[in-house]
Structure formats: structure tokens, C-alpha cells
Image (cartoon, rainbow, N blue to C red; front, side, top):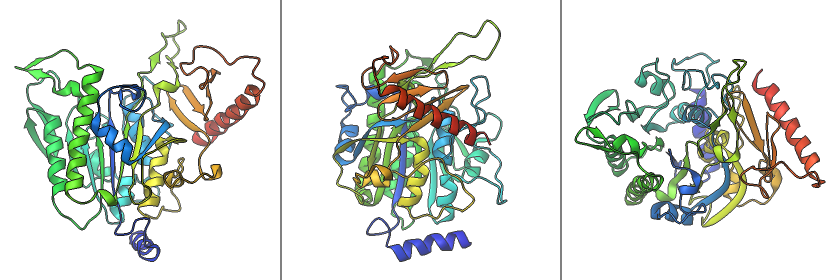
Length: 409
């Protein structure tokens, strides 16, 4: 109760970051659509709705996700770098499915927003652990309402099943059914602010004709599918009159597919050939109450930054015992130039590989060091003639070592 009162008191005494009421928050993620397939990120792909969002918002050129949906979801909702269950041989698992009411429980951003008066909604697909019931996992992670596909790999089924607020429904097209649910939700007036977490279904789950699986959708088809889905949501938001008071973030679950090295002949665990492109994702933020949009930035962002940013924008109090790894990028959204108000490195991990980068250089835990401005595809080691490189590498090594110690405590 004290947490809720504190949150609303903050809204009252500060006037908020926006002029009217606590802003809505929509987090939309594409999947199986790499960064380079999105219009505005080095491709001529026709994605008019994403292009319009880019012109109205801030486009980030250097943003990192985690290499998998499971790890991305954990990181996005917790604001923490994943440290357990990261191995490629581990069973995929979301944030722990059992809700705990003790002070030692680790709330998600949905939990915190719900406690502060927000309606929380999860839609699309959900990274479940295969053990915890789907609805139990959603509720434990703080979502009051949900409309999610029961299984994202239903491409061999003529009818797909979705879970809508605890009720299983059979539909012919899960993607359309979920999007219709969200359009209906946005069309209804409400005085309650909301948080929507929406990983868009992959196109492969709806390529069914006469009960038979069709050839896999092309990269271009998947990009257009994401664009159409996003466009319908943006249109509904505009029709409802909520656009000016909504923080809308569009990104992707992961970048290019990570390459896996062959298993070691000694029987050790396989490792990931880490690259910047494996975790670098499109990242566009529309926040009319913070900026006029239409800007591109090279400020660094990774998925741990979403929680502190949303907390700041919504003026939601962070529990004193809650530790976050991320840093709010509200200064970046406001166009602040002071580098001390922004982060100067981003981090990702998967299996036994950890990787870190700054604006120019990349380093992983296998000691692969690259200059991404001169060698974006990481084909060659940094030239020994580069006199600044040793100092830059040492700094990243120290950061990687420090993160290893802190995250494994």
C-alpha cells in the first residue's frame, strides 16, 4: 500500500513528464525479422508504417537485445542481465512462474506498473518454461489481462489455439485474432493507463492452406507482416486519441541468427560465435510528450534499459531493494547531449559467451576484438598499427570482468 501511495504522490507533486495524465506504454517486438530487413535500417524494404513511426519518433542505430526470445523477455521485464539458465543446452524458461509475496521476490516492470494503478496486458507470444501453466506464468509476471498464442509453433495445425484471459479459444489465424483483440481494447475509452507487452507472432505460424504447411515465409514477407500488424495498432491508437500520451517502443526479439560452433571433440558444451549483428536490433521510440521526433541517434541502448526508462516516464517508484542493471534513456529521448547522462557500453550474454561494445569497439569473452566502424562484419582483428586500440580493449576487458563478478554474486 505504501508503494502505491508513494507512486501516486509522485505523479501528483511532479506533474509528470507529460502534461495530462500518466502515459500509456506499448512495447512491440518483431521476431524473425533482422534489423537490415526493416525500412530505414539500410534496406529499401517497403515498411510504410515503421517508416512513419521512425519519422515521428527517435531511431536508435545501436541497440542490443539478447540472442534468444527467452533471454530477451527475461531482460526486458526484469531490467536485469540473465545469469542463470543461459546455456544452449538448458530448458528454455521465462521469469520464474511462481508468484511470491515476500520481500525477496523480484518484481517485473508489469508487476510494478500494476501496483501503481496500471492495467497490464500481454499479447502475441510468450516465452513459457514448458512446465508452469501459461496463465500462471503470465499472472506471476504481473499481467492482469492476456491474449497470447498457446504455442507459437502451430504451423502444422489447421486451427490454432489462443489463451484469452484464461479461456482457450480455437481460431483459424492466431495473428489476426490477437490483433483484433488489441484493436478492440484500444477502441474502448478508459481512464486507466495501460502497459502492453506485444511480441508479434511470426508469419510462419499462419502460412496454412487446406491444413497443410506452406513454404516458409521470406524475410520480405515477414517484414511486411510486422509492418501491417504495427500499422493497425498505430491506427487504433490514433483513433482513440491516446497517441500524444503514449510511449511506444518498437524493437525486435533478436538480431541475426547466432552461429553455433561445432561441439568440441572433448565433449565440452557448444559455444556461440558471438557477433554484433546477432544481438543488434531495430529500436524506434515514439514519445510525443518528450520530443518532436524525426531524429536519429547513436546513443547506446540495451534491453536492460527498458525497465528504468519506463519507471521514470511513468513516475513509478522503484522499490529500494530492487536492483536494476539498466539505465534510463529518457535523457537521450529528450536530446540531452551530456555523455555522462548516457551509457557508454552495452552488454549481452548467451551460453558461455559474453559480449560487450561501446560506440566503436566490440569484445567477447573469447577475446575476439573488433573495430565495428572499420570492420562491421567482424572479419578481421584490429590492426596492430591502431595505437588507440589497446587502451580501448583494456577498458572493455575491465568492464567485462567486473560484470562477470557482479552478475554471478
